[in-house]
Image (tube, rainbow, N blue to C red; front, top):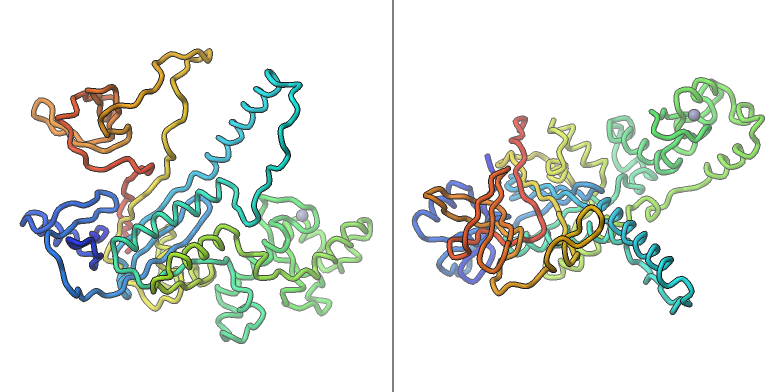
Length: 429
Ligand SMILES: [Zn+2]
């Protein structure tokens, strides 16, 4: 079971995605041609007037390292994808650049006055590593809108829904005692107490939910009476009151009491990037696309109820209100952002001396990273090409290097700064 194939007609109007088998038929019959390799899209050779399309829902689960995408046609999951971000890589690269610039200034222009001090960030701007996350998600959402009749976008906006926590009567017992409650409370406490032990500030240890006023002394299960503690502190505190337990640490006691009164507002727990993604989608969706937001607790609840494995794309399919899911595909397209080519003008050896000719522009339109097909000695090779000079290129497959001239090369996919592969088939589906 593979992802459905996107279809557009002669005028590039998006039609409903079809099964890979049907796409193969259309291609062999000559009724369609390949329009794009990733995501696989075919273009029909005729116009379809007043096509009856059924609306497609795009579901997005934005994460810090991976963002999951799922396309649904009603209950049917027809397309899965996982986008791998490069936020950390961008951060490291910028730090490196910063160091180089600082070094250069120290060496060469030490006594020069600073030119101006008006470098300000505009309010609401994201750091580059987060901005990249927003932009790549935008790119892919735009691709879906271009190739499929999208009518609805569901985005997981928050980890937990504050409104549902403050009015626990929205849902009944299940919400207060079920898995949803446990997950939501934990996430809330982690956020409130800064993901560390309240008493000893240790992080990266298993944390237990702790009653500040012990239950044996009439403390309640209310969220305002809970905090997080490592097992050591939890045991040490036992059923002591907090004043008694922190007798020797009046400062910490004061701090904790202050933090106790803090009520997390909605805005405080909404991740800035997720917020920006929702805003971006709302902006894109002006032309009749409905935008819905949901919370992480609902996703986890849906996934557990339907007994699905934890994968970013499957999480995406589980966001929002889900009754049941029918998986028509069990394999996700893995999309890895690789960034653009380097800005370096020529290569350096290990001592920092230039060891190649300066980069030059060629007359042909090929770029390193394009995917092409070539035939050499009767064998067909498909892969990423490396531009070598005006006449020749190379395809590298493992250690094998296949060089050829451009007239024997067919372009399959232009380099778009993503690396594509397919996930193993999720057998549980
Ligand atoms: Zn502790």
